[in-house]
Length: 197
Image (cartoon, rainbow, N blue to C red; front, top):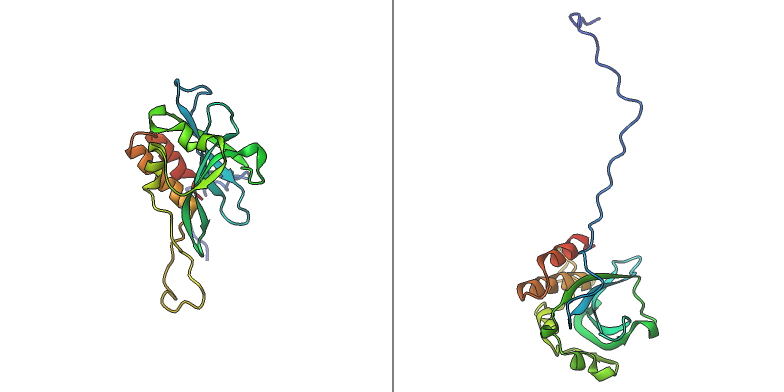
């Protein structure tokens, strides 16, 4: 059986070269000048390789005297046992085995939100769980995630959908409070939310 096209020529064949899909664009970090306003502190995102799991994230507030010494603010723990708010004071990135794979400058934050002596523990390294300045108190409003991974033998939660919350979840939520308290610009929170794994 033959069909007539009514004198209309058949459509052209598909092109031989297929268009390569455009890869999703990688969000660009906020533009941060190398020098900030007088007295301001540079806040960075520290990214630690978590392979084969998600990367670990932390805030790092540089001291005014040395780029590698500052305050590491993060939620530490795991999804099985839960997380807790932790601050490593006078944390020396040049003298630790816990070295970030990437440092992303986020924003210069006004000095009025910090107490340099207290947050750096007057030059003595210390692990702390309580905020000592306005910036830390603002971030502390985001509660560190509790246990979000259920055990296989946990009958009460068996079959329920689980949303895993972790250090990245905490850091993004903390950014929201820092924006609300006018320490971060909204572009910082948007950037962090966009790159969250």
